[in-house]
Image (tube, rainbow, N blue to C red; front, top):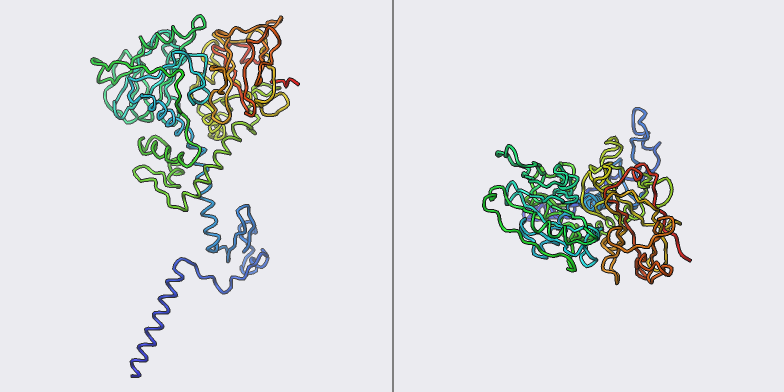
Length: 528
């Protein structure tokens, strides 16, 4: 009986110990000496030698994420949970800011898929120019777009035949990196030619001659071509593309698939990446599709830290999904601040006024100070949040070739442009553009063309019947109702009451005065 009692007591003690261990499985026991000490001197007193204060951690630290507590530098369970939540949040925000180039390309691919473009021989062409119906980041109303996607994994080396007379054309990879220019700024210099695009892992034979050869870093690539207006009309370029553009796998050069053209004008479709949790799914789809070599380990590691990793499902638990939902909201707000209210002094094109450059830092590789400042991260985020097409032809000083851009988000007083108000904008005489210049209005919400009663919310020196001033300049007028003086109604662009807007001034074939900054557009002046 005594033995039984001892056994019962022993089992009871073991059981209590087991329960105690189970209850403490996820919590670190707090040492008895864990009295909070904020005095660095008290901490230093426990050492034999003089320990530098800068390497010590007090027991209580107040931060922007709350109060953090430690015992002798060991974080409490509550602190560990708090900082891991914050770390996941920060990496979620950084994934948004750094993932935009990839999801923007993916948004374009999905948008073209929605209008029937699922193969490289299918091309969207804007026969009547790009109006404000499609959602397309800072689309152009002044050139005829022809665009498609090529998939090098499915088709292998792919040929793109460019017709003579093609304007600026570019191929970008799945992270919006430059692959090759075509047409006027490309090696064919507008004379037309055959381009052979090789997959990133291609090791086969390459034709000895007859092609301009470029190797991409990704399987999926975006092709965007532009044709100029002739006599103010798109017909010439539309016919040029439909009769001369060919895209086909090299292996099918003797039995090329017939080209199919989809008219994108007046169609409604979306090509813009998500600004909510779906953003992470879009990015994951890109990561799963592309080769490991597509991104460097640092960037790939950032994405993997929140669960986006090649050959693994992206399936965050409830905690992580809540954190990432918050992170994408903050990331989106951050991208909008970087885009619309930049703090970079390098953004200013001129010494005075509020015209800003799209390519802050002047590098299509997004290098800061010729690489001394590394990758210009905010400049890259800003560009791809608001725009598309990455090519040196939009950055380098190519007199008479390529294109240059100036963006206005603010009026002369430094306030956002407000669609409820009326403005005037003076474009001085002798605009330094060999081909043409244009001004297009955009919606800050969608970064697409502003939707008004004017299908093409823009003016174009080739297409618009602009009325000049006596000195040869042109004054444009903006407002919800026609605010132009009598006789200059053609110079009015409509805004939307209660909405903001911004504009882009484009110069095709920019000339010396632009690069020398001896010619400068006026600021938006409020009409009171």
